[in-house]
Length: 81
Image (cartoon, rainbow, N blue to C red; front, side, top):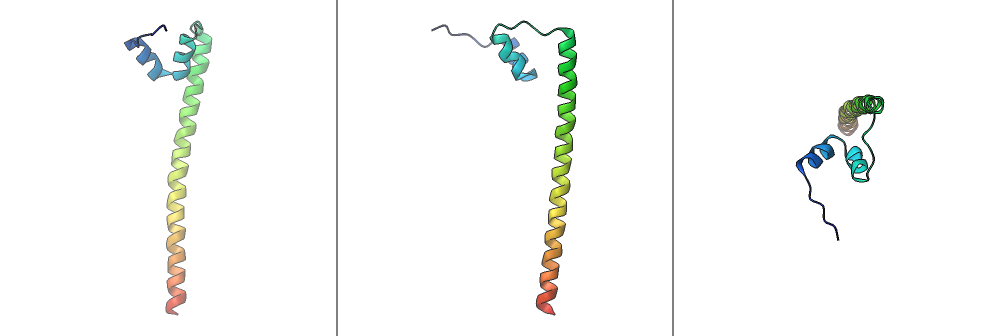
């Protein structure tokens, strides 16, 4: 069995992009500058989508808590009435 050592450059490549690291280990040649630019744009767009999702989750959590507080207030008002 051929055991391959993990080099620091492998760790750097993996931390930057796991897919690129995998493809390099499969013997694929590095991407052209056009492919790399497209990949950078895709990563940038994905980053913005993740940021919007996190913001949406925060807003939905706040709205849920506000709704829950309103329900509790309505229930309390109904009991006291």
